[in-house]
Image (cartoon, rainbow, N blue to C red; front, side):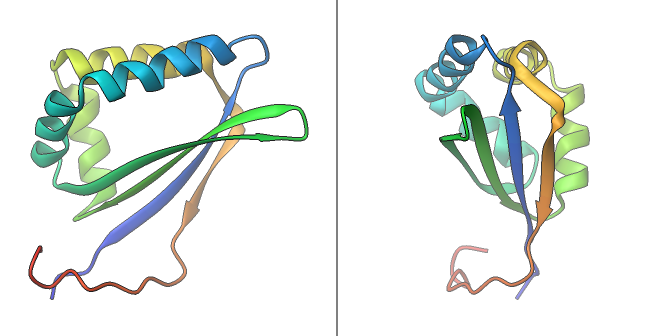
Length: 116
């Protein structure tokens, strides 16, 4: 079975930009069909978003599992899909790059043989 590349992005929302972050997540939710097409092209199997408030800061957690996350990010950055373009616009407007981090998977269990 193929190995999965898994990352968890902990993205800190800039103070005062929480409404933009909500708008971003709503946009992605409303454009699920197009989003599914883009992740297929990026060889991503699963992309999941969570929102959390921690110590008066808002975070968006992005869980991604795919064949090669670095490849996927490269494809997404070059994409002309309106979903990818708008996705990166929202991120640049509301995410604090210095307050964010990327977590690598230490362990995963799966039962995806028939899906991969």
